[in-house]
Image 1 (cartoon, rainbow over the protein chains, first blue to last red):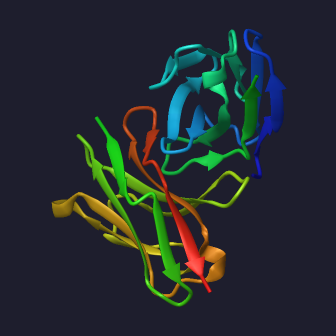
Image 2: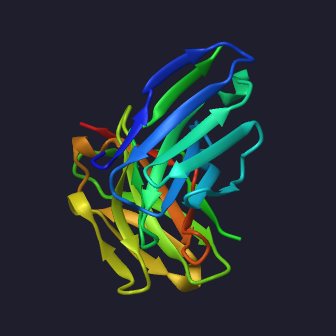
Length: 111
Length: 114
């Protein structure tokens, strides 16, 4: 989607390795979010950020950490990847008004 | 706390038939409500949103939804389904006063039969 990009788009990694996913925005929006999407669960919030260096946990934050050192980038790190973290990860941005803009997603497979 | 329930993980309709996708919410504050659509291998696109203005909301591609506070519902409808409507649809509620976090339903996959 225009103004928000996720990288990589696909990744296969081994159990126990650290993995970092990147979300980059050009909209200068204050709020950024990481969700994971799994069949039957919809999208579940992992972490979110409400400003540079301001982050907080969502409903499924165990095993994940985030960092936001500048407005445009929000990084999601899986500290030690497990098979249960195989999922599609979506980043979203918001200016605090109504509605999110979503990235195209990162498909992560942990083997 | 906010939550969303979407009744029916799969809905199948014939081309030209009415589409009805159900969404019920719970919210401790006046809600903002949204419908998103996801086509295969893509991100989510906003279909329409309710933000406390008119209770009947019109969105893109001929979809609309009606906010009914008494029923805590926000069902999505389209009078006549098209093959291109086949996708997964997500209802979401926002606690707009708390960092604008969204809570999503589990999704409904719409199949359109020729």
